[in-house]
Length: 146
Image 1 (spheres, helix red, strand yellow):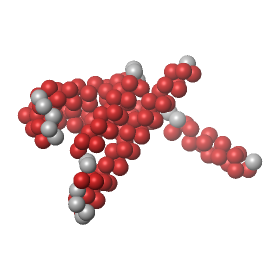
Image 2 (spheres, rainbow, N blue to C red):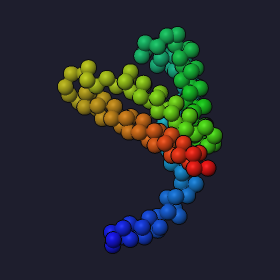
Image 3 (spheres, one colour):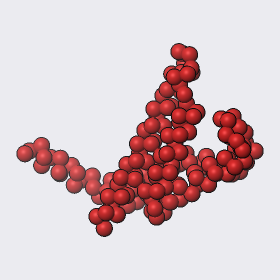
Image 4 (cartoon, rainbow, N blue to C red):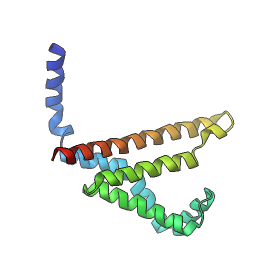
C-alpha cells in the first residue's frame, strides 16, 4: 500500500510537466526531427535524393525520391498538428521499418566494426518504430475516450 501511495505522489509531482500538451508536442517534434531534416535536405538537393534512391535500388529514382520527401514531411506535419496523428505515426513507423530492413541488413555483413555499427543502428531504428507505435496507440485511445 505504501508503494502505491509513493508512486501516486511521484506521478502527481511529475504530471504538471510531463503530462503537459507542450511537452507532448516537443516529444513529437523530437520523434519527427530526423524525418523533417531528411525531407528538407532531400527537397533542397533533389539530385542527391535521387542518388540515394538509386543506391538502394529503388527505381524510378525521381518518383521514389518525391514519395519519400512527401511522406517524411507530410506524415511529420500530421503528427505535429495533431490531425490524423495516428495515421502520420503509422506511416512513419512503417516507412522506418521498411527502410531499416532495406538499408541496415547487418546480418549480411562480415563480423567486425561495420556489422556492429549497423546492428546498433538497426535496433535504434526499431526503437523509433516502437515510439511511433506508441503515438498511434495513445492517439487512438484518446480518440476513443473522447
